[in-house]
Length: 558
Image 1 (spheres, one colour):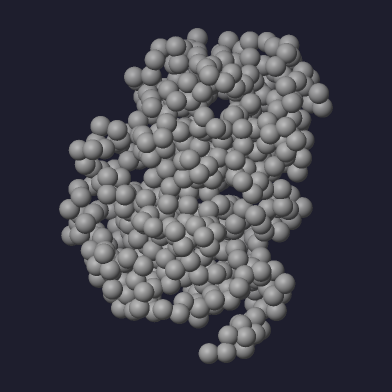
Image 2 (cartoon, helix red, strand yellow):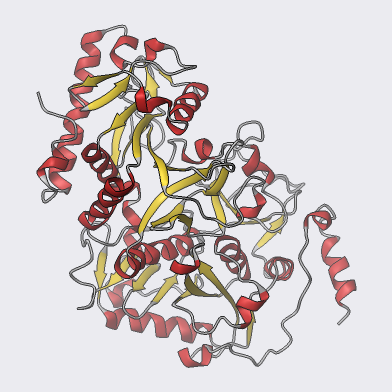
């Protein structure tokens, strides 16, 4: 085979990608090598291990999995599943993990016999097919790193996880050995839901004792990323005494001072952590150890809906050769239309973190000096920033509040509260108290300052008030990071139990106290009482065993 000629013909598809690609074109020479898959009983026709993006993209295109966009990104569609499928997610219930797991609406138990049967059927399904292995790492701190082997049916998904995990050097790959965890991914295999008593044709199941996970029936690659995260969120506390966090993190490149940003979708977590004056450690998943904060990942998975270069230039410019677009509609010239919602609101792109110019290559920072909880309060009653006591910080860490906006989902006519435990409830398998205790221990040991930042509305609820200007929020975040707020003058809010700074440089004083921005003070009181009651009811229902000093640090009933 003439590799040069083949590479040339491949790039004729889109000449623009030639300059972006720094990868060497490689071919798996030994088609009989199984890399240990025979131990699983897996007998594919060909095994490809840690292929370059160039080869994976070529294979994906030849398989009809996607197309190249005008900038060289691989654009794929994921079929029926365009997002995570929480009702199809299970944990194998064994004696070794039963008492550790927070069973309920999120963590669903399943018998190991069902898991083993589905796993065997997936293995049979892949017999005689080409399969793609990626061996890589989760955890930028070598002391707390885990080796993952992901076995894919599709080269496009193998490229995705190559982008998202930490990529080994040639030496690390040569000495990789056995993986700590294996994930088998076969979207082409559809589960028999009736036979196995499961929710649908898709199944995302983790066996923590066996260190094995399966993802069947769904081509949405976010399931792979979040399965890795869910595994790390179990392993880090249980095995390493590391606190896992669903957050972004950045640091001052000169001093190493580190900040952590928690926040649910739409709160500004990615935007505020992407500060050109600071170094990005990671955008989504981290651990907090005695050494500091470290990224679990080697890549980013960003939303693309309404993406504009002027608003999010780093993400926009990262969409080139080697990145994977999911469910983004393109025109006949292969130009993405980021405003097109015809497939899903949840359009995404995955790319290596080094596609971001100011990203940390090490993926590690120091002990957090500041933690920021971001909430988009669409009710318009929370202050734009407030300082939290130690117990209040644990309360809001556990609560994970934001609000859905009217119109974001069918049937949502007015703002609705969303409470996601630990700002990442779907991915936190252990009991909430364990994570809360670890967070409190770190606040006690290191004196980290915690602030609640409202990136939502002021002067009224959504539809009446206006969203707090990003420039004001950035000014308040900067004041928190540089220490200006540590000695500021504060007033206490009795209803929400918050300490509100009277003034912040670069922010109009009149917006600091929310009630002052409402034209109707009585309307503010009614809305604020209503939201406070939502907090209290949620906490009483979900965390009845939380210590009294934590529950009492949140909003109070009148």
